[in-house]
Length: 349
Image (cartoon, rainbow, N blue to C red; front, side, top):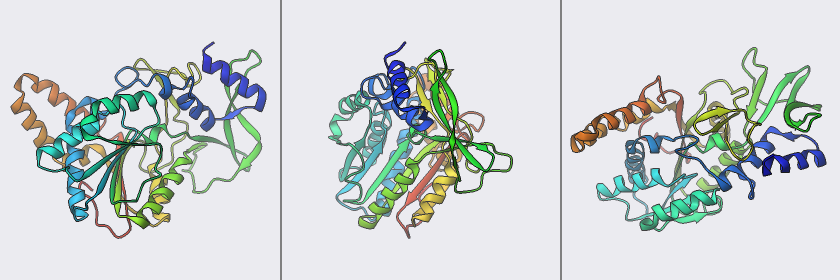
């Protein structure tokens, strides 16, 4: 039995079954055994867009420069990334910004929950002297742009199953043999806001989406800015049961290797947009990743890279194709931008 599985068993025996959100949070962030605390697996368990092609980060860098200029070129100015992985995307962003003579007035900040990734970011981004934020406590002190790629999908989700007069929360408990198993909290029937799709019998809710929108709304009272969020999930109906686990590039059971596999859920972009609009934010999107990147000049940048690196032409082409092709990541991933009230639509939307 792994260290975290034993710890979870003790928690459940002492306090009863855990909501899926609590199980997910413990698996990812337990300081002693959690996945992101001890063994984050970019390039091993999963791969992200910045690791597939440098074009991804370069285009977001130029987008950031454009949006800074649209804000009037404020100085000082914060460029913030949440969940920056190994620092690959921000490194590509800053290189692209510098290539057109920008970035001198940018203050780079990183909000990172993983100490392993934070160490990698400090090494890779040392020339930019980033600040490392424990959370969003300084958000809004200055005009800012916030970017996050594949961060929302890691936010813990509560799961509900339709049962009679309302919705029953899905929990993680123990079998008679002491193994982890899914069950339902039948002692508490909940009413969920928003109407599920016809015939939908399960639904996921990420409470942190509420917190994100509230934090941005409070920050935009103090300073203008935007938050660009890229992740996978539907643009319309709320996700049902999408909890998945990945280990060494293969999908495994979510209860099989707690703390040793990455856990992820689809993002409910429609709910995120509703929450943002409710708080007065300007919402652009969600749009599909492929058209968004193409609108920012993905094809032109790809051709320039191929011309400069003809020996890597096929690799460059395949990387960009994977990001924009609707049969690969181009339609699965969505892009949404949440802005201060009254701002014009950002580039790419």
